[in-house]
Length: 143
Length: 137
Image (cartoon, rainbow over all chains, first blue to last red):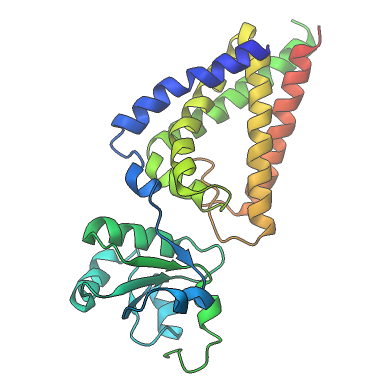
């Protein structure tokens, strides 16, 4: 039984290899092995100085309730609507900081990846603790 | 056919159908499934991507194995282990309060984590029962 179980585990490697190589929607391998850094708010000042371009990856209603001053709203739901403003605002010296609700939210990761892929951004980070950490910072929240 | 054999066949067919469906659904978009795995925050992006192309095929092979009597015990054992890992991963995500979809049946099928946890627990019980019954002579 254990020999057959081991054989099943090995057999799955063969089609998996071809899926990773040829599937039209295979993972982007260089992205997977060169992940976008995730930093906490407290660690942001430790990064090399650069003007920040804040991207709020939450939905529009959450963005309307409050966001980082100057942040641009860009999420996968309304990607085409939000992208032109990001392209206008971005310049090569910017560090792009993408955030969503914080904790376990997935939007910032998806938006950061897509930005890096479509705009070939190199200076981009994800704010791991997101809006949860940003919101209490009085004076930094724009209604 | 003895009642025991009927139970084994019913469990094997049900588990094979679920694994077959899950594997096929995940294969539609391995890149999105890689993100789903990554969102569990248990693996870095690289291993998540490797798992995203491997896991669907393992599920499909296990589905086929469960339907072949000579392979059933081995496939059942691996299926039980697989569901144990899934249950643990979903349970950990739920306990940590992560706001994610489980990706159990591919990307874009949002399932609340508590529901996914209970479903995986049920599947784990079914797979374990099937394996034990298959092993008893």
